[in-house]
Length: 158
Image (tube, rainbow, N blue to C red):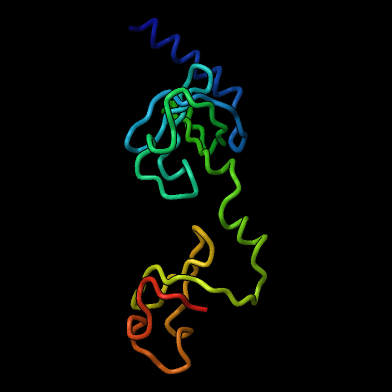
């Protein structure tokens, strides 16, 4: 056990010396869990938390990734004391907001679908995966107490 621990420590030290925060590297998905995916970076695994797999919502990493997949990952953090590497797949990809910035000009009037209505306003999807908040004060020219008086989920609005 002591020899294996020494070998592991030497391997960790070597990998940590080669990696820098912010760098994008290629790795192989080694195993999947409910909370993320462990990616092999050449003998040492780093964790891609489920929230860092995709810009879309991911409930189970196995829905998106498979053991053995080659993936590009960005190094978010290196914790040499605990021997942990935090990684992100989504940081290597264009996000939905990048696409929206290319397609929508400031001041444009868009049609969208009401997704959720809350006390303070309504969330309206204007492009796939892109929602904006319409504050309660911007929903009507007349004063309304609650957005649900005027809007419901599924409504098409300008």
